[in-house]
Image (cartoon, rainbow, N blue to C red; front, side, top):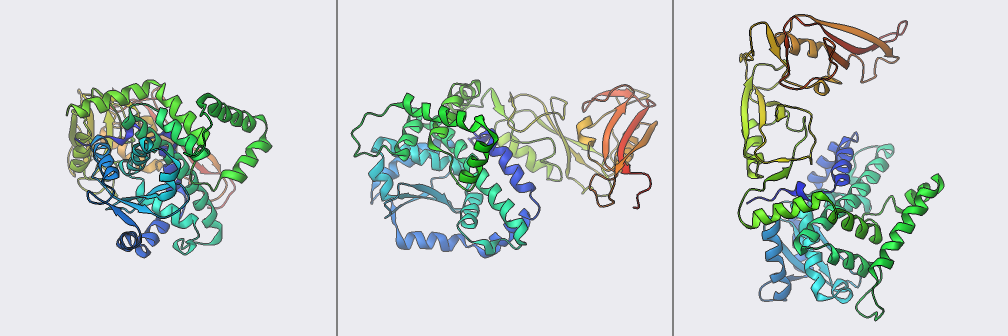
Length: 449
C-alpha cells in the first residue's frame, strides 16, 4: 500500500516549498537544471568512486534498509559508502535515488543509530525531496550557471532553497521517528552530530542538550538585532541547528498528530486503510489536471469516497476534461495537511463542454465554489461563472485603489457578497435572483491606464 507522506511532512516544509516555487524565475531555474544536469552521470560517479553496499559487501547495512523502505512504502535505493572523515549521509538522484554514507559517519555514531540515519534519508525519498535537494545543493555550492537570470534574482532563490532544505530536514526526522517507534534515537543522532562521537566517554545528558535549544530560542526572541544575527549566520545553512531539530521532533512526538501518524502506520502494516489521513491536496492545486489521475492518486493514498462530477462551468481558457474545483465534504475551504476521515466525500469537478449544472429546485442556483475561490479572479470571469450557474442579478462595483496599470491586482475580485452573505461554500443554494455584488480593484480617478 502506498504511504501518504503528508502523515509526517512538517508544516514549514510544505510552506517553504510553496514559497520557493512562487519566486519569479523559479520555473526557468528548474528547466535549466534539468537540461544541464545528468542523473546518470551522478550515479556513474558514485559507482566508480565509492563502495556500493550489497548483500555481498557490508551486508549488515544493506539489511537495515529493507524494513525501513517497506514501512515508508518506497523502493529500496542503492546504498554507497564514501571515504570522508566528515560524518554525513545524503540522498541524491531523481528517478533512481541513492543514499551515500561517509566513513566519518560510521566512526561517529554507534551501529544501532545507523537505521535512524537511513530512515531519515529514506524519509527524504518518501517526501519527494530528492530532486529539489539535489538541485538546491548544487546551486548553493556555486553552480550559479544553472540560474539563467540576472544577479538580482539569484540570491532570493538561493535563500529560499536554503530555507526549504532546512525545513525538509524536519520532515525526514519525523519519518525516522516513526520508523524507530520513538523520537529518542533522533535526539541522540542530533547529539552525536553536535559533538558526542563514539570516542567521548562523557555521559550524554538529553535534558542538558535540549536546554541549549531553549536558551537559543530565548536569545533570538530577546531583540530584533539577535534575529538579524541569526539570519546573517544561518540563512545559507542547509540543515537546522542540531538542538532545534531534537526539540522539534520531541514536540511533534508529544502531539495528537503524532498519535494519528502512528495509527496510520499500524494500519498500513496490517494492509488496511487508516481511519484518518491528512489531505495531500489544496483547493486549487489540482486545477487543470486530469480528473481520473487525481482520483486515482487520492484513492491510492487511502481516501475511499472520491467521486467525479462533470460541469459546464468553465471559461474560454478552461481545457476540456480538466479539473476546475475540488470539494471536501461539500466545501472548498480546506487545506493541505488537514486530517480528515478517509470516508469523507471528496468531489472532483471537471469541465465538460455543454454540460449544464443541476439545479437544486426551481428558481434556485447552487454555488460550485466558495467565496475564497473567487478572490483574486478577474471580475469579468467571475460574472460569467456566476451567470452561467444561473444567478440573474450579478453586479460589479469598482474600488478605485490602483495607481499603476501594471499592478497585478487591477480588475481582480476583492469580495463577493451574496445577499448579506460575504462567506459562502461550494454547494450553498440561493434564490437565482438574489443580489450578488462583486467588488474589484480599479484605477484611481485621474490616473492613466
